[in-house]
Length: 260
Image (cartoon, rainbow, N blue to C red; front, side, top):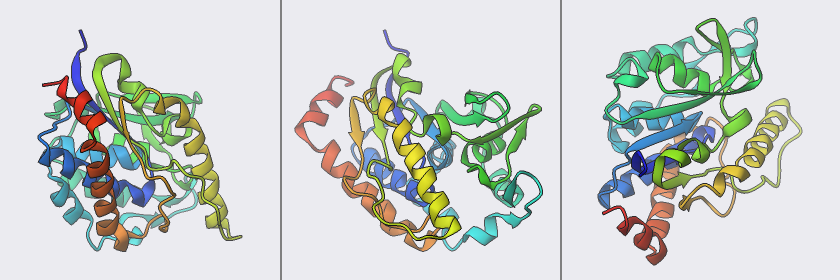
């Protein structure tokens, strides 16, 4: 017998992570409460705040009008261009629970162990710092040190953590935000870097897609700048619309009915 009934896997995706909020909102309307959540990068951020007791709308409000500059500091001496101290401070201020193991909803945060070159799944530890580690895109952000080990974005090995939940869940619902290959990009450092990260994240997600019983993902790439918070509400609505299409289908309804 499975340890958990419904597991929710939330992929990385930078600003596209606001789509997770739309999915969670639609799930709430349908009375679907995940028994456990696994998240990578933006998925770990949204999943952690939801597991911490925030509603999707409350999470959106937390980030309204908070641009990239308010969350980071330029500091190209610690292994990345930007320091994440402000981001960690913001999370520490707003998180109601300080450690992963204290959360009302179990959470697994996926990061990359930069020292050993492998994925690491946090199931306990300092919540804010583990989220920052999972979100620390290499080169762009400084690595995050936890217990003497340097961690960066979990998307390098496991951007879509469905397989992290599969052994323990009767049903895995996955939200994958990087299914389509971006077709155009500019010949700038940031644009080339962003495209490279997207290709890595998209490729390593293929294995995890097959571990989902139900998957929610856009059919085309979400065309939005990586840190354009002005698009957050529109992206949340996109997630809501996608979730409505999938979760209201007869196929999803039949699978979810087995949990009741």
